[in-house]
Image 1 (cartoon, one colour):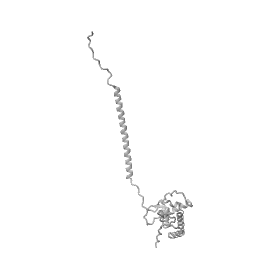
Image 2: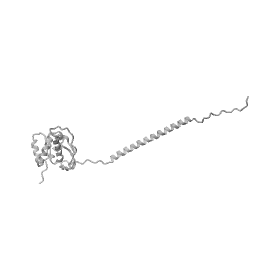
Image 3: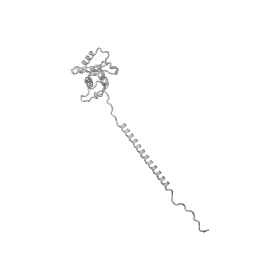
Image 4: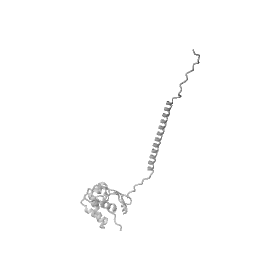
Length: 206
């Protein structure tokens, strides 16, 4: 029987579990990337929201031009300057037996001669639409200087409106006064049952 001392078993070498530590490092790294990515997205979203809010605020702060007030009711409409461009004529299907040029001439005459057609009645029954004169069949609204702001499409499809304006235009071209034009138009259309409540032209100054 040997009397050699018995050695205690030494722990197995190999150190700590490297695989587990490596896995923890990978998990921590992925978590950090996710946080950074989330932070970038949040920043981008916040920047977009600020930009959107700033843009909306800028639009609200930017003063918008006000629409000019039309001529006061009851006051004569100023004759528009000759060099003022007219708005495009409305594209409405021609429903009357008149050429497009005749219709266009009636609209242009109404636009440029409010001092004539504002005192000439219409006889098509358009007073039910609020019209008070033949000019209303072509021009819906004007600017303070008398230029056309918006057309009325009623005259595009009304034979009576166009013919009244054409009669007035022809008489005006021959040198007739406004009151003579009105009297002639009323005489020609006397058989019509309807007539707009059109004011008479002002008396000429002495």
